[in-house]
Image (cartoon, rainbow over all chains, first blue to last red; front, side, top):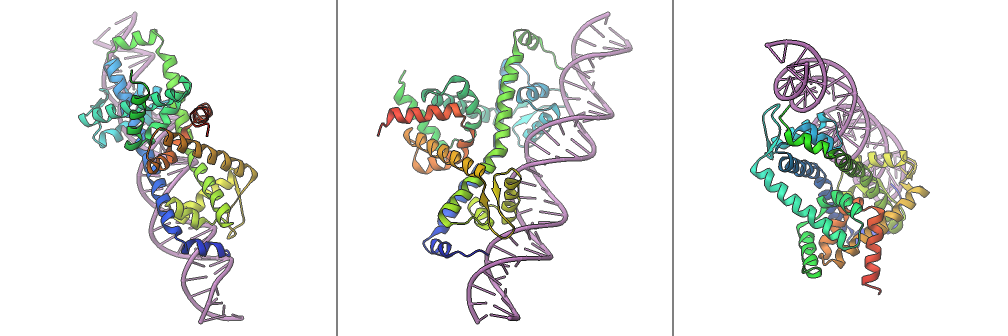
Length: 155
Length: 155
DNA sequence: TATCAAATGTAGCTTTAGCTACACTTCTGC
DNA sequence: GCAGAAGTGTAGCTAAAGCTACATTTGATA
């Protein structure tokens, strides 16, 4: 145990609530991680279904830059989660729930890219960064983004 | 193998580059994930060192909402990565490199929060979302953020 | 100073997401 | 209509990040 004169004072002054708030924030960020991957898969599968009429594990794997085995395993998780369906060797499809999620994700992605562009971020970087950012944008923030864009570019 | 009339056409039309670009983007997002945790730890340890004069694994664990064992294991990774030092039972400190990283991370965090606030995101949500967003903001985007804030609020 | 609670560290388990290597279908083209 | 290539699926490994349970060290205090 280290000496801790200042620590005790901080505790008495009410450090605990701050700790809890921060912990809650971090915890949320962490658990968002697992959902992010599924969202990426759902979005991409929806893309492939729209543009190619089918979504094959190998295409998914290529697009995401992972091995086909990894893609297949994650697609299995999607099915377990009720987001995707499909029989062996027959391609992947989205359930109603999966399609709803895809739509939400796509809308959010669009909004994040637009915000970045509006802020003067170069197109290339905007697309790239949006991929990482979008999974961490809460509904409140999303609403603010939409409102900002509307007010700026009534278009 | 599924039938794929359209697929072939798309390939001939040059789908491959698109695939590679997207794969590169996703890969970057994924590998950013591992760095994000270390960044959080470094930032927090720097916080604790500044405000308390010491950074103890238990405090880190409490703030991050994980068990002390998890914190200790990750701190060991920090040490292996050359970001932290410290002898057993003696608290954690940052190396020069760790301090440099902490400064960068803190600056970036500040900038992201400020941008969110400038866009009209409620303070609570801005702080929370920034935690997740900041790890995915490239230098180009960061520069754009800074420039936008300067132009908007010459303060 | 000897004890004991709190902090620290270690061991071993789980899940997720990745990989390679191997096995099995399916489709294409001859 | 068959052979082989391409796609799909399975098995088994790794590393990260989390946990609980147990062991060890430290510092406060009686």
